Image (tube, rainbow, N blue to C red; front, top):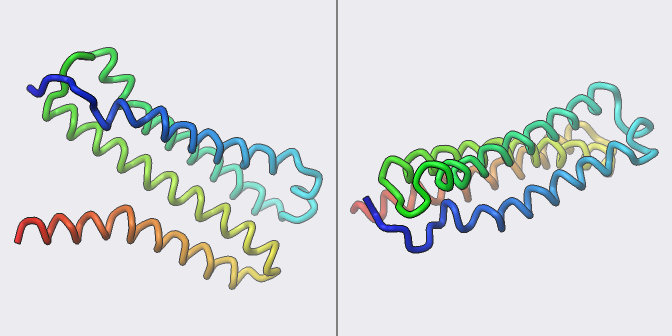
Length: 146
């Protein structure tokens, strides 16, 4: 058991939560914008709704380690907690990457007036998230073990 002395899983979450909160606010503002129903088909509006739900899931997953830590053992950090917190945060990142990529699709589709370009741009954004959030850490972990 490691004594608590500044934990990135519990100390950094409130800063990340502000970012999640901003993303959610922007998504909600779009729904109440007059152009929302004019520029998006019914299916695209549903896609935006799914994107909002994914941000909410991401927030819940990102905050779970902090809540768990504060309720279970606020003065120490176990290896088990670090593994669980890491899994929850990684799941949060997947949810957030999908959500943001869906919204980038919708915005690209409107701005570029093309479903194909919207899919291409959102696919590139999703690939960027995957490569930086998962590919880069995997590569660095492999380099460290050599």
